[in-house]
Length: 254
Image 1 (cartoon, rainbow, N blue to C red):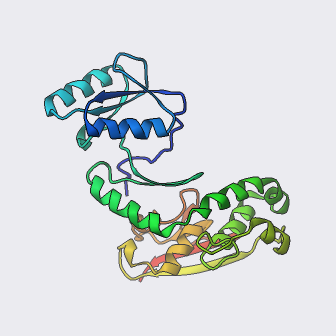
Image 2 (cartoon, rainbow, N blue to C red):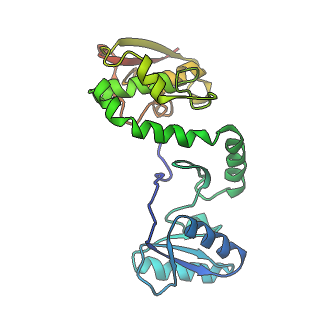
């Protein structure tokens, strides 16, 4: 399945971003840009990004064409067909950011999803991220191999794990003091028999297996939409293939 766009987080601190337009729509974009640390400038200033918040369709299209002629990437408010990039709804749990995008086709839906996630994700998730960052030297010492380290973190960050992000008090220091660092990588194979070609029919356990698998071994008729539920860096192999260290998910149609 092709992504309609690739989500990116861009550091804008001190960088110029062009803003064209007036009124509440433009004011809202200005507030967002300033919150991200951008220097908001006029159309003639040198910049790589621009936001066009103009009411008239013709005026907006002309402004976008002028900017693109300068190789500036443009977001045209409420006009997804004119956008080189879109601005998502944001859940801010600094340094954790969750972005919800719809490719510009429904800002209302993105906002509704943001409100649901705001209620779900506690503020302490940001502190957990900072604690994991501070623990990187200890994590590297305990699990020198990157794949082993990723598997260890996946285990404790899963629902019910020692560092479950939704648990009341995940404590990285306590976990590092009680876990068994440096254990040999386990070899595990799980089998997923698909009931349909719809990835939404995966059970929660099956979706978790795919998300954490190091290798995905699949039959030729397994839909790409299902395989896309696996990590982007997971090895994908056509069946049959032997298992290896870590988690191998074998996927076949029922």
